Amino acid sequence: MTDKRNLAFAIVVFLAPVAVAWFGLSVPAAVGVVLLLLLLRWFVTLSGILAPERTPKLVLATISASHFVEKVRWSMDLLDVDYVEQTSGATLGAFYSGRSVPQLKVRTGIVRSVIGDSPDILRYLYGRYVHEDPQRVAFLEPTAERVELERKLDAYARSLQVWIYCYLLPDRDLTLHAWGVNNPATPAWQRVALRVLFPVQAFLIRYSFKTNEKGYKRAVARIEETLTMAEEQLADGRDSLLGGNDINFTDIAFAAYTGLWLRPLAYGGGMADANRFERDRMPAAMRADIERWEEAYPRAAAWVERLYESRPPAAGAP
Image (tube, rainbow, N blue to C red; front, side):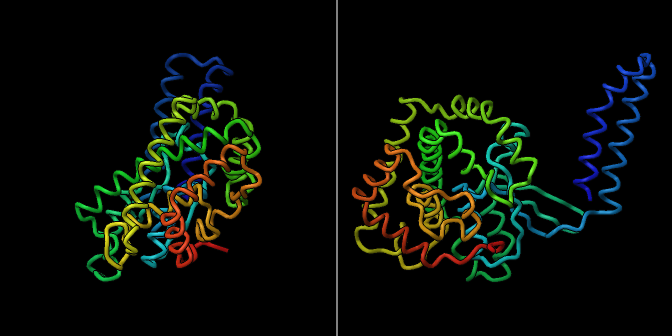
């Protein structure tokens, strides 16, 4: 209900200057319209307090195929908490509203909070649930060693974004498929917007991610540096990158990020299937990179595949 009220208010704000121009209102009348809009905004805010929207306590805002999303989604599935996944179309939120995913929307009574960025979401989940069941939440404990590794792995993930966009953007249909235009969970208006705005979004991504030859080479060097690190750490047969038999959120992060190129069947826990594309649909050079990495880093690839074999289905999976 609150979202609908906000949408209605946005439409009114958009139409207000049109009405002022159409009817040739005077300056005092235009000021009156502004004051009326401020009063309406206050009413929308107040209505959200007096008649709050009935929403789930936890809503995970996502792009289905995002590897940063998969890191949080998988962690929440292991934590076995009730949440609802809210799918959006690719980069629309980042470029047009300044909001990236994942985002965790938390409702506590009438209070609503939004937590962005995967590390912050995992810190919230640990703090929220550790007192209820410390053993169940232990894999999210943010020790200094884990947080430092997470920082390095997040840099690996950002390099993977550059790498994949270098290959996807020249193929409009493949990019749109990965963005969710064929995913029924993506809102219909966003599926239309993705198609219409593709040239603009492609330009913004090329500019933001530096998807040129230099950017590609730099990204691949960083990717292979991380894969080398993982290959060496896993050489002794350990179950966790940091040692020991129990996995933690850094293992989930590495598996989720690597899943972006390795593409295990359980990637997304069933929530990214509609965005999936197989290797025979990839550009030849992209397949060559993947095959080279599988050959050069067999332990890391096999370890990720094994981890995905035990990945539970996502909460909203069909």
